[in-house]
Every structure is written in C-alpha cells, then in structure tokens.
Image 1 (cartoon, helix red, strand yellow):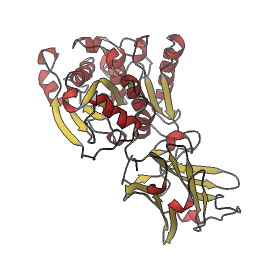
Image 2: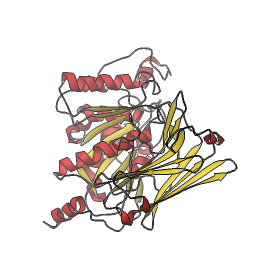
Image 3: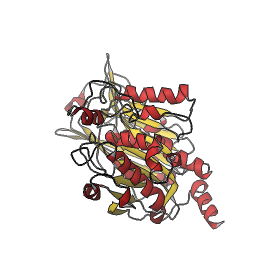
Image 4: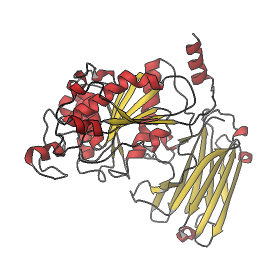
Amino acid sequence: MVKKLFLYLLVFGGLSLPAKEPTIQKEIFYYDDVKLIEHDVEYAKERCKLDLFIPGNDETKRPVVLFFHGGGLRGGKKYFPEALKSSGAIIVSANYRLSCERAKCPDYLYDAAAAANWVFKHIAEYGGDPDCVIISGHSAGAYLSAMVGMDARYLARFSEKNTRFLLIAPVSGQMTTHFQIQNERLGTHQEIAEHVVVDEYAPIWHAKKGLPPVILLTGGVDLDWPARPQENQLLYSVLRKIHHDERAKIYCIDGFGHSECIEPALTILVKREMWQAYAKQKRVASMPENYLLNSGRKIEFQAQRTGKAKVGASAVIAQKEGKIIVDVTCTEPAFDQLVYGPRAWSSDCLNLYLATAENLEGQWVMDSKGRAEFYPFGLKERLWKASVERTPTGWNAHYEVDLAGIDGKLVKANIVRDRRTKDAREVTCWSPVYGNGFQEKDALVPLVEK
C-alpha cells in the first residue's frame, strides 16, 4: 500500500526527491555458467563483461536499457550514450566477443543473450525492474538486439524468453543477414555485402506475431548506411501489414547519418516510447519528465533540414536558483546580414520556446541587431530576461526565465535559429530531436520540475 501511494505521488503529485549522484559498476562478467560458453572460453572471459549506470533520485524500480555498441561485429567497446544517461533508466552496456579467429557466428549472438539473461536475473539487485527491460544497440549492436529480441532460440539456451522484453529498439541495425556473417562464410572483409541475404541470421526472418513491440530507429534515408533505413522500413511493413502488429513503429531521422543518429534516436526512444511503455506496464497514467537533458553541456547547432554538420553556433542550457539559464554563442559574422522585414522575426533570428504541462507557451524572437519581440501564448514577458552581445567574431545571447512565476509544474524548452532569405530558409535547432516542424512536441527539451 505504501509503495502504491509513493508511485501515485510521484506520477500525479509531482513529488520530487533529493537528487543523488549516479553510480557506475564496471566489468561485471555476465555468464552465470561458463559451461554454456562454446569455443574460446578465455576470450569470452575477456570480452563478456558489462557496465551499469545507475541514476540517483528514488527507491522505486526503474526501467532498464540493455545497450550493445556498434563496430561491424569486428570492433567497438561498451559505453553509455548521453541520451540514456539523462533518461532516468538504468543503463546496462555490454561488450561481446568480436568476429575474429577466436569467435564466429553465432558466438556473439549467444553473448548478447547471456547479457540479457544476466539483466533479467540480477538487475533487481541494482534497483532495476526485470519486467521493464528494453533491448537496444547501435549498428552491429542494433543487429544483436534485434536478433536476441526476435529469435527465441538464443535466450532459450538460458531458459529465458525473448517475449519478456518491454521493447526491442535497434538503432540503425541491419535487418537482413549481417554483412560480417557473410564475410565469415566467404573469407572476405567487405563492409557492404554484394548480395542481400535473408536467412535464419536475419532479424526480418523472425518477424512474427507475439513479439514485444519493435521500435525501429535509423538516420536519414539518404544519409544512413546504404539501404539501412530501407531494410528497417521493410521489417516495419512486415510487422504492420503482414502480422498486423500496430505497436511496431519506425523513426527515420532526417539530417543525421549512421553515426550521428545515435543520440537523437535514443532521445526519441526515451521521450516517446520508454516511459510510456513503462507506465503501461505498471498500469499508471504516465511518468514525469523530471530530468534535465544535457544540463550544462555545450551542444552544437546542426542543420535540421539540410543535413549539414555544424553551423558555427552552440548552446548551453541549465537550471540554477529557480531559473532556466540559456547561453548561445555564435562565431558566424554572417549573422549580420540585412534584416529586411518589419519585425524581428524576419530574416535571421533566434527563437527560444518554453512550454508547461498546462500547454502554456512563450517565445522570444531576437535578431542579430539585438531587437527582440515576445510572443506570450499564455506566458508572461516579465518572467523573461533576454540580451544579445556583439563580439569581434560573432555574438552571444543570454536568456533567463524565472520558473517561480510559471504556473505549470513541468517545463520544456527548445532553441531554434531560423535564417531566411528572399529565396530560401534554413532552420537549425539546439534540441537533439527534430521533426517536420521545429515546434514539434518532441523538439522541446524536458527540464526538471520547478
């Protein structure tokens, strides 16, 4: 009864607890029984280890993300993606044996299954919820997560079921038979297979009814690994149209390539899928977004629509003494271009959006000459302070928003640079998540409760 009351207060009452520093556990060997290791046992003892990232804050059981690194099945090592570190979930980041003379298919598949089995068996000891485990990874790690999540044989070796996963969420994973498996068969070293092979080592081979929800995430259709988004789109279509699984989803994130899509993809996973699935599993209405994403860390602007890498501007957003503090730095003298419109919102300007749980929004628009206009949408201008300072190489913009005067408990923010000319328009965002419109809901970065 006490536990249920605590969860109710956390979800509906905006209960906040003293923040604790996250703890990290490293180099945990995840095979409970070495007899289940085939081939080179010593190599498995070297590679088959995982790290844990355990966020502070409360004593409730947390969702868990099991994440596998990429590297073409031939390289790479475990790490904690930034988007997951700010998610509120426990992260389990696992190494696996790499394809070489000491390991071949399916060794690394069984390693990934062994890591998942360890999570199911032991994560409760670290505050994780074994009934709310998401299996994910990037590139080769995404392939492993899809195979272990969709093919029951691998976890069956450990007397576990793949249907126990809360979500299967590969990021830019190969959904046909992995090219490195083809290399092992042919004795080659190509990174793009000459032929598309679909057999028992292809995730799409195992698409069927009864799987956990499959959330597919990739980079842009023309920017990600060749044919990678298309393979994911095919799997999505098979799940939706042939097996009528309406829970399957796909996100192709325009403007990001194979390596660059990791953080925005995982941010989408957290914000759109993870907490909603967790809330449904626990039969509560929703979970609060009570974390500050990328707090205090400089984020480079990237082009939203054109896919360009960086545009010479960066932002730092943080919360301090009851205020949202935003500092934007630009080293582009081109920001001095002529403002031809009658309003600040004309040719080249910064837009800072805020939104609350009650859907009240406010927007500051500032141009390169320091002119600013406020569009309230329910919020009050007196809560904001904004200024632009010219520098020898560009400009700095500073925003302060007083949270004490905002009625909503939850606040989100997003910075957008909107550059327009008479013939074209370029939109760039600070937020790591973009959509078809720069005011799309998921382009708003969640901030801690006031």
